[in-house]
Structure formats: C-alpha cells, structure tokens
Image 1: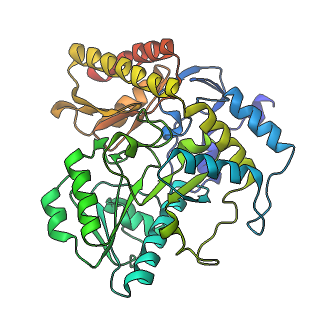
Image 2 (image 1 turned 90 degrees about the vertical axis):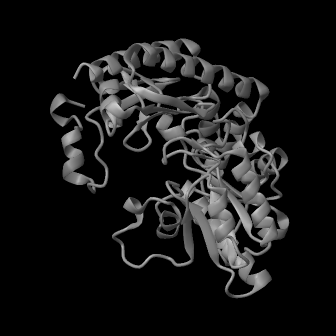
Length: 405
C-alpha cells in the first residue's frame, strides 16, 4: 500500500460511529506480548485486549486451530450441532460445576441469556411476581439494554428511554443492604466475583457467603459474571473456584476465545431445562470456528503450570508497581488478584487515570483504566517475565512523565 493510501486515525472520524475515541496508534501486528504499529513502533501489551488475549497475540496453538478448522467448516446454524462445539461443551462441563452449556458470541450475550434464563426459571417454578434481579453498584454486565440496566453504572444505561423493570442495585460487599432487600420476589442475584470495570474491587468471602445463603433461603439463583475473571485470569480456571461459593449460572467470554469472539453460559441440568426449544438462540453461537479456537485455549490454559505462572506473574507485577510507588507516591493501593490488577490513584492524582494510560502509550506500553482513578493491567497469562520487567520500566517512565507535569 502506498503512503498516499495509508489508512489513518483521521479516517475513523470520517467513517466510524463516534462512540469510541481510539488512540492515534494503529497496531498492525502482534506476537506474544508485543505489538507493532503502522510505523514500526513496538509496544509491550499489559492490556490484553481488555483481558481477552489470554495467550498473547498469535499464539501458535490458536493460530493452528484457526487454520485447521478454517479449512474444514466455519458455520452451520443451530439446526445442526458440530464436533468442536460438543468437544468444548464437554471440556467446560468436565472442568466446572456445570452440567449444561449454551454458546454465544460475547459477554453481553451470555449475560443476556443468563438473565432471561433466571426469569424463565422463576416464572416456571414459582409463578408470576418472582422477577426481581438484584445487582450491584459499579457492576458491568454488557451493553444490551437488559445487561446495561442490570449493570450498576447509570452513565451507561441512562438516555435510552424506559429501562427493563425489576432491577435493584445495592452497594457491593454490603451484607446488611443485601439482607434488607432479598425476598421471595427475588429471582436472581448477579455479581462479578471481582469487579473489573468498576475499579478492580474484590468480593469479600463473607459477602459471597451471604449472597449464597440468602439466595438459597429465598429460592433465588446466583449468577456469577466471569466474563473478565474467567479462563485463568485470577489463577484458577474460574474465580468461583477460589471461593467457597458455587453459582447456579456462570457466564464466560473474553479470554475463552483468546481473541476470537465466543462466549458461554454454564448452568445445571435442572435450571437449563427451562430454556426449552425456541425460548432463546444465537445465529453464530457455537459455530465450529469459534469453538475450535475455544478448545485450543482451554487445552493450553487449564493446566497447573499456567495457573501457577499467573500467581508468580501477579507477584512480579505487584512488587514492581509498589516499587514504582515508593519512588513517585502516586497510588493509594495496588489491588486485584492474579493478572487482573489495579493501581488506585491517591488524592493528589484523582481523575487522572487516563493521563497515565496516554503517557504509557508514549513510552511503548499498552494499559487500561477502570474508571477515572484506577489504572488497570490485564496482560497475557503467559507473558514472559522479561516482558513484565521491561513493561514496568516503561510504566515507570510514564509515571515520571505524569508526576513531572
């Protein structure tokens, strides 16, 4: 392509709907935890496509699965099943509490299915009136109208007219508020075991135990949104495995395809039977191409070696961020678990998370934010330890740059 025909950031403003404000950097190639832009500039990737690229960029096992399946069968429709879907569903059932799997294409779709299933289950089993969904402030469950309403961030859900009804938001980790609200009209309690978009906030063990106990008492279902925490991100295949609580429904997406769109809703046989033929569906959900890649992801990720490696990398990242903070005093705390980490800005730097992200890009580091006050890191689960070290060097330069402003 000649220089005159080069695709540019300015063209985004000409041809794209303006709901995103992307960086001027346009990546064109990735390998492992490194990315290169149009001009050959190299970046270390601490963002992972927002916890999606769990094995980095162009992992050989995923590239191999894509090529192999790409020459066999891409899409059928759900009039027929296919071998990759059966294999992936079996792996998910064998590895988790679940007995049944529903495939979709994104976290929002998996959450939409989970919420519809919870409502249908309650209606079938207990009759009309048991429809309240309890969710939590600062939660994020997707951008469909139902999931964005259940998510606890008004900035994302306001301004589109009347919202779906029967949704109650409570403070996260507030057991008293939960006890006061749950009743026999509650059909489901939905939460992230570690809130991602809301600021990297971990659910306390006591809170999770209360969720489970109150749901059981009132015949409500517990839905774990593990779209961001799942597939090894916290050092176990799913975050619920690090707790004493087992959900009734679990949603998974993002890392399940390692960068290829796929999602799944996991549940029990008893609950699943309420999604009878025709009650829900997805054109692309469970397509052979996505499921072949999902199989490859699970084969690589679901091993003690990878989970142990996540915990080791967490410590390296945490230690490195604390060391930077000892020098520059910009963070109030480093929080999170596994490779879903947040550096929380102190009083002096309130509202400036994006400044650190932008400075990072200028120093050759890709990171994320989780609200205006938290810098978020979700690198590949298998990022080389040398890349963590180099990424921290670049991030320190970015911190120094912001601190000097």
